[in-house]
Length: 153
Image 1 (cartoon, rainbow, N blue to C red):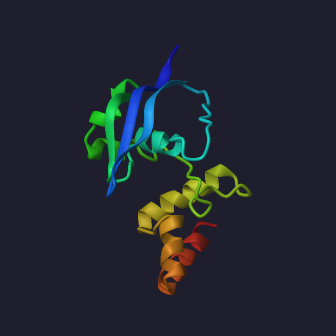
Image 2 (image 1 turned 180 degrees about the vertical axis):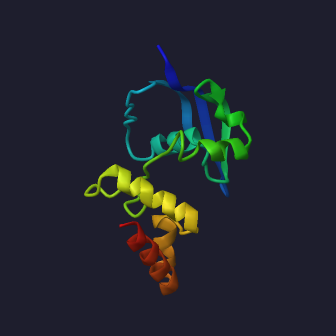
């Protein structure tokens, strides 16, 4: 069995003004290379927190109290941020639940990935950041993004 991802005994808590709240308790699973894994549970059960930990983007008040997350044999919880940065987006990624930052189901995946590469190249923010700027009235951001989007078509 060739596992690309192994999560062992993961325990994650969050610091709050009321104390520490346990969000994930002793979660373990394996993901075989080339396979798909579905993590299913009730709202608030820790699915997103587990996934965020697996790609190294826990909120600032998140604490991994126990466990390990092995990606291709390396414990990503022990990797420096610069190494995680190299993995994120290239080797490991997440499609977020937020509809403004998720992939468009009407467009094939490859053009959307190309669009993200263009965004990175020109420093254009991703959808959730972009949407927030537009909501706040930054029209120049919208015009800049639209200009580069049209160049890729």
